Length: 307
Image (tube, rainbow, N blue to C red; front, top):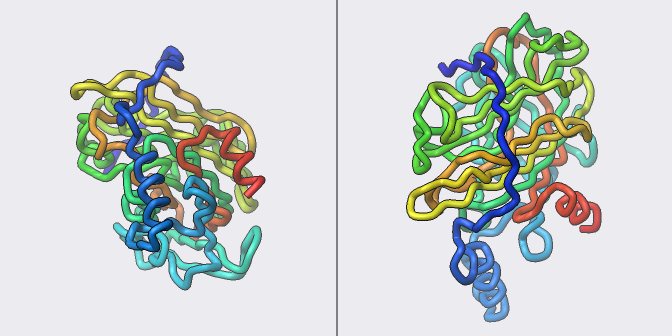
């Protein structure tokens, strides 16, 4: 079990200078785009595709109506309770189905990972993802926390469980909400960031915010993560994590360090259910999961609006 006790938020400087981790000539993703275009022109298939990808593959809309089960699009793993994530029709924002996850007899529901190496062929440098979430029947005790989404997850011993993050062995951010910081409970709970990165020690870096996730109604959550630059096994402090709750910037850090290698960049994003405390009879619905690659928030939102 990981500990998520809050720590003092660090004041980090902002840096806009960045060298890509794949810095020489064509970047890894640019190469994949050109290779995919050439293959298409020759009528060759075999490169893994993304869910409902548009254009050159930078826009991904995970349309739940296109799938019969969450495992058709997500890697569903680490199921610890008696409930398996499922698609349901009783509560949606658009379309016919939403993703339903319920807390039963376990501390964790499951990971539902949209894995980029499997869907688009490689780890990623920069990911914007947004989703709608409807938290139902939560009545958290003081200091209880709910982790709702991996934004992002790169699997390995350095991504959770109190593991030491060394730049090659995984990292993560499990975002969620908690009954802390004078949350307006039970109508809403404050948003938090819980990240494993190169500059945290022990368990993850837990940062409370004042943004409120409303209970028993739909919320829009946005995540923008960009990996740090790195050379010769050294990580530069220019990685980015930004999160918005219902249009409000809730958390931002532009001087983070996550990785020192190409195969430890961004592996996955996706729904998560994990409680520290009490969440009996509570559930979460997810809908409208969109992903944009190699884009910041404004560019991504404009691209999604115009697709």
